[in-house]
Image (cartoon, rainbow over all chains, first blue to last red; front, top):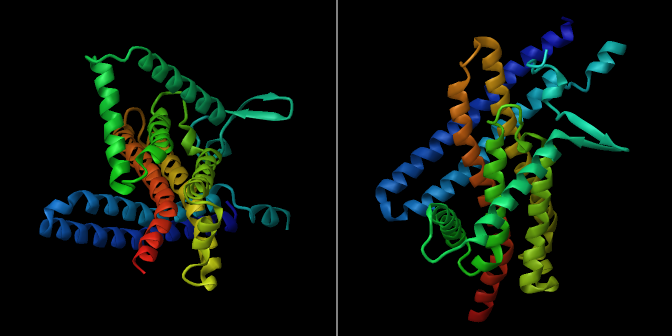
Length: 86
Length: 235
């Protein structure tokens, strides 16, 4: 293991930790507000649920972006060939 | 070792065979298989529709009614127009996402090429339905309302939401499959089954969300003009 792969691994682990933290907080807030709204207005459940699902998908995609970037860093790092050759 | 996720073969689909310069990947083959199977199933189903429906017809009708209700809740005036496209997306995505559970098969939606193709389809159908409904001039005008300064932002949002649509589905399906694989490597036989259960739920949710977002984008292209028409009618 070269210093570069070690560094990549550390960066990936820290990156996914931070990258999941934000969406987790955001999802918690979204769900708690949706529950509150549903408790106040149970008849609006359908539209609240629909909006909630779409909002969750939007928030979740942030975490997914982080995951995709990290998979690229781990498995398909484009900088690797420069390191190997240089 | 086949199971090793570090092996690049897991991030990109395996090439099954070549026809000249054309590479036929596992994704393309699975997609064709799913389309053929669904088409055959629906064709057989439509052959024997009865007034007194059997179990299969009742189930199919329930699925159709559920989808139609979901479309009607978003775009009440365009159910007939949007239902074929969105319903097809939903049915195909549910089947495609669940295909990953069959041993030996990968779900086509874990390949970025497949999800990107679907997202591009959604991108074009937004404009197609919008232009078909209201005409080219009226449709293009909504890009420069309320102010032409907003034109770059409109264009940017069109592009980013298409990319987001593709990456979201791809990332979800691939990460689920990879998580199951990693648990299998770490813990061994039968251990990934709870994760596979999560896979079922996630596959259904992601299919729902993809279709719903497509529906909302298309309905947004249609209804923007309706709102404008209504406000112009009041003036």
